[in-house]
Amino acid sequence: MKTIIVLLLVTFTAFSILSFRTSALAVNTPTEAVKSTVDAVIDTLKDRGLSAPDKKQERRSRIKALISDRFDFEEMSQRSLARHWSERSPEEKKEFVNLFSELLRSSYIGKIESYTDEKITYGKETLKGDGKYAGVDTTIVTKNVNIPIEYRLMLKEDKWWVYDVVIEGVSFISTYRSQYNQIIVNESYSGLLKKMKSKLDEINILENKETAGKGKS
Image 1 (cartoon, one colour):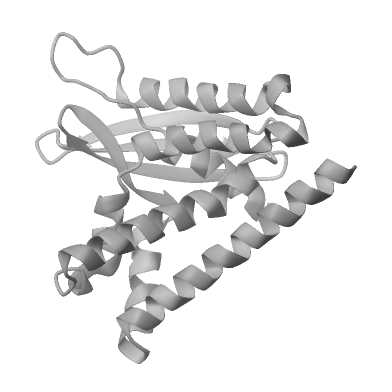
Image 2: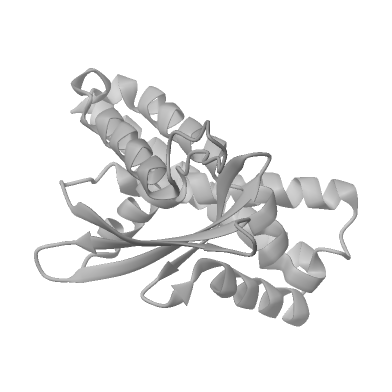
């Protein structure tokens, strides 16, 4: 199993949940919404008009737009910082959300460009908390292994937003929460921000090198 494939398909589904309404006006179930957006992202990746090196940024911008519109970065930021969130000032919270979201987007964009026709099957859909929370079970089907993934969503203003992804029983949020807490306790909150900014710089430098290399070929 290649980690790049897992991250690819996680991004397809987890960052792209569309709205679901329980009223008579409802068009999509959570699962149908996931599938429709997955198809839209895949279409973007397969668009030959966006495959040229000079179109790379445009393609990434389109994918980032899908990610940003359907993924609740503020909710995930709050859950990741846990008790440390309440200790932050409004300005610090805004800074963290911006950095956290950009780091996630930048981390995954390069990986999803390696899409190679892996398949996704859709399983059980569960509503929780009086219908305000939902879980969507899916499976990534590869040649060598099947990877179960659960997407956890919450309903805000008649729209489903993903706030966590569980891959083979491991929660993204729990993982971030543990890592971030350890850094803050052992170092400081400013130490955490420094590490996040450094990681983002590394990703950006790598992206620039890849773009420059493809432009010369």
